[in-house]
Image 1 (cartoon, helix red, strand yellow):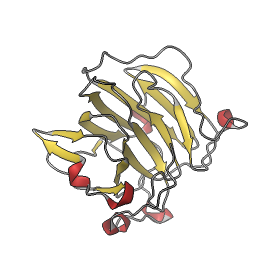
Image 2 (cartoon, helix red, strand yellow; image 1 turned 90 degrees about the vertical axis):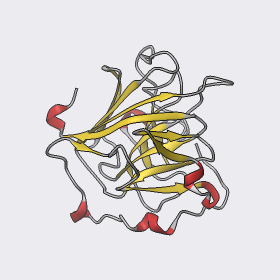
Image 3 (tube, rainbow, N blue to C red; image 1 turned 30 degrees about the horizontal axis):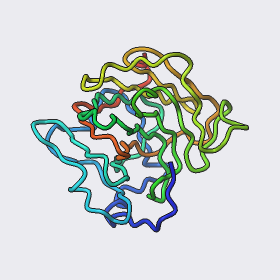
Image 4 (tube, one colour; image 1 turned 180 degrees about the vertical axis):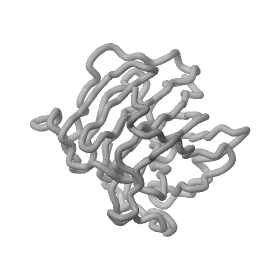
Length: 219
């Protein structure tokens, strides 16, 4: 989950720096992906790698190769929302590997930033990671690199099928809902707003939908 190498993030990643006055609270459904391109998004990749070699859009679907590590994030910061990502692993050999939905992402951009991760690793979707100093009541006393584990067995669909990953962010609480099942919840988080991102971390994935809804629509 961390890398000590010197990191360089694209200069335009700082266009969307948000002050407290610029944090958005959704009042209706907001599409984060327009089905055509990465409008409203920016990138941070390890060692300044060209994001065009990792991320692309074809036939209305985002494709991420998973290499090198880094992330795609919104330019707009948000709080009090439900974010839904519909994704799937493309390749199963040698393994489906890893990705993640990042919420409450903090500046500066780096691999990895302070945030909360709704885990996307195959077989572990529903774990919640507190990254780079973020903390929560359920994580206190645990190793900083250990997740708050999901509460029961995974609810993922078979590799190659679409999964619906929902992250509910209500003030200082975060819930992970996988394919309609509440898998995890953490409370008293030390971050409650920020950018939203998707990890490139080994998994060859596709994303067909990403959208925000107000908390009134939370599962």
